[in-house]
Length: 419
Ligand code: EPZ
Image (cartoon, rainbow, N blue to C red; front, side):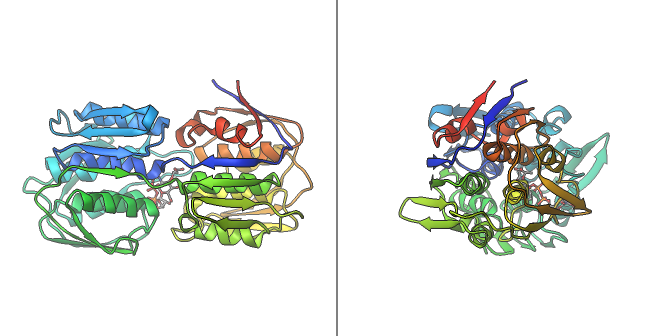
């Protein structure tokens, strides 16, 4: 089991190239199931979640060719051999449910294991299923599997999401591209990854309008064609490294991303005293010369503050001046990083879905445990600013979402080793 050792107290200075977005790459890979023509994806990060999705698609009979050296993936579903997504794959990565919509739309039936819960919450997929039923799919749940079929194809229809769901929107968006007639998806997720998927689907011949708004209108087409698509930058990775600069009193130039990808984070960082400057090809994040100011935050669907940046913000606030109230509105159990940060000397108390962080003068390095993808990177951030040595266990969580993490941080002067 790999560990990561960090010796803190170094101000990070340098450039970091932001990788393609994990949460855009996963639905984009699943989109290959909608056509028998090849789909070429560029700027795909080399992450274990991408490997898991590639493995699942291969098991369905998709030919998947990954070129890790150039971050490209070629996918072609012209000869599917199965429409079953098995439990042992889905339980490892819940984004596997993204094959549900495309398979029902193209193959007219599928069996996808229910994902089961995960560390941050129960994370049901009831909205995915209700939406597919609105498009005419017949859904039944047997022995932990979703059986979905649409023998005469899907029929376009209006559907309003009771709550915003990112992969729910992506599943229905993909299914609707091949449904007969018009589909209107109301209260859709507006995350940039949803927009990236929609742009790629339109390049494949889909007819989607309202991209970037909470109402997506899709006119069904008979079939989709081949295209080449470059994945957008990972806004969560970019936001994480922006906070690393702020936390360590440094200055980092983020390459390949834009402020538009994290509008609320940039507003809050400025309020905390951080300077952000966008030039032609880089976004410079500069820490204040004085102490960071505590700023409250509430997680919300895009363009609100991303829940995937909440743990990182907590690490930032743990050494800020004053107090900060952090409220998590998306998931019911996303404070597992709190006890670990407290072991490093942070002063945080949790009351239901809110955590009150009282800034301390400094954190102390300690052996800590990673629990989920974003919680583990908040421990890396804390280790970068803590006095002494921090040892992080179970770093496989990090490998799911951060390409070349140690390399990128070492490039800015961090003392970080994988053991
Ligand atoms: C996506 O998960 C992301 N994953 C998550 O990132 C991210 O945290 C989340 O969106 C919120 O932004 C991918 O894109 C692969 P949701 P998703 O459906 O789609 C409830 C990471 O770290 N809900 O928007 O599963 C759900 O329980 C991961 O990269 C239902 O009740 O999230 C949650 O409380 C973690 N029924 C809320 O909605 C449903 O059918 C938002 O979930 C679906 C969701």
